[in-house]
Image (tube, rainbow, N blue to C red; front, side, top):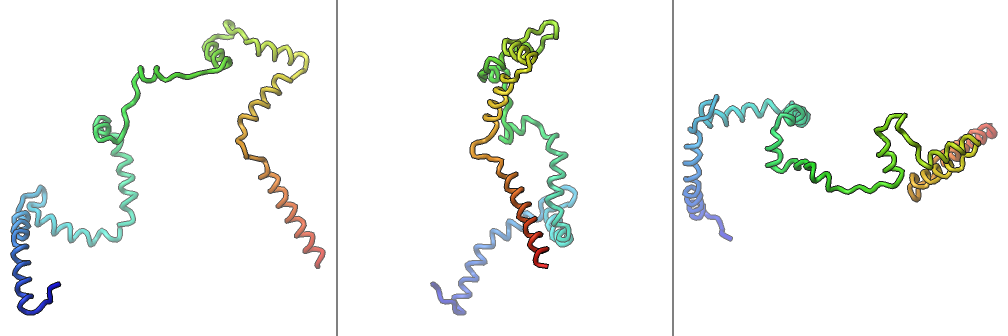
Length: 185
């Protein structure tokens, strides 16, 4: 480390002034560069300094203003520019969509095949015929089995209906506390 004395202070000041001279020269020339509307860069910097003082009270509205502005501006931005910048992904072509293979069970394939048919062209499946026969007799075993299968698939493992039981328990506890309070009086 250098101990600063009067003689060292002059040397350090001289070195700093030599090092900062090119920077000062660049800044002096940059201040005279023409700038639209304001005239020069120096005028712009003076205006920015002055305006920044008056912006402080409205700083809380900066984020909502930016979000609101982008809400209106973003749809107008060119989609090709968004792709070039990597902001969005290219949409899939028809060939790429055809390559995606979907597997359907028998019921789904039958439903897809018959979805566009009119009631006159519609032919019920074997399962539909079986359900109709059972319904005429008042038997609902096939529908009950389908419902049980659906329920077992729909319920997530570990998920119980204990929430309702817990609420009932809490209500009973509250009633007991009220009864105890009345007994004490």
